Image 1 (tube, rainbow, N blue to C red):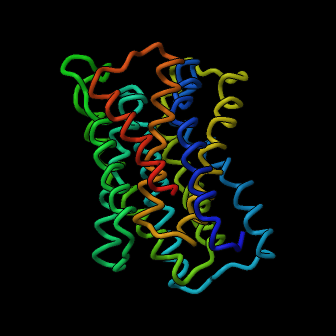
Image 2: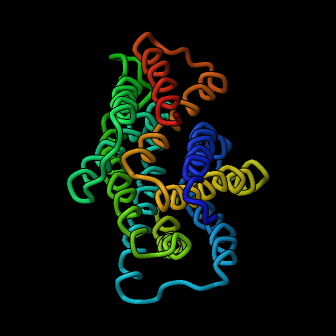
Length: 287
């Protein structure tokens, strides 16, 4: 994974895997496996990905204070956002929440331009702009058409948006001085350290599905997220954040399309416009 030209491949894998993950994330919960326990399963799926990445660098990671602090910050923002995401999914459906939180590239882009002084071509700026507009369309809800209960899901989604926007920036910033493998290692450690909170948040008075559609199916689904996260670290290692993040922010496109099929939800005209713009943005950013 040393080719600087492979950032696009990594970014596309992240986009596809996260898109499928977003569409399937509710399946174990609907089958009786709580989202909080889903977080624990997700944290465990980080382990094999971390082991593979460490094997590739012969188990050598940065252990200086700066690297530990940066890697842990990336992990805390990502895992903390993930924990909030599972809570948000208790209040609203994935096909609404994922497009909403996919606005996070806007924050990453602003920070990257202002603090990292990243620059790109005019064509890529068109792609970035198209992606941002698409995300806004994808996050729109018709009045009264939402399955969400109240506005708690929106507040939680905004927190996830902030956490993930900062995480993507911190991930790129960390990549300037750290190995991608070290970053992912610390991400895994922090994710595991937060599992007791997820256990504490779980309501064990309810019936829990411990069969295949419970932890085992959750493991398969969340492994897609963990692999995507590892690929994102590599993509940001070799590519510019203002290009990589908007591209991976198109994962909700896949989530929505699969959700329309799985949950038989028909998109309105505004959502359809968002889907068309998303496809255009992916093509421009991939050029």
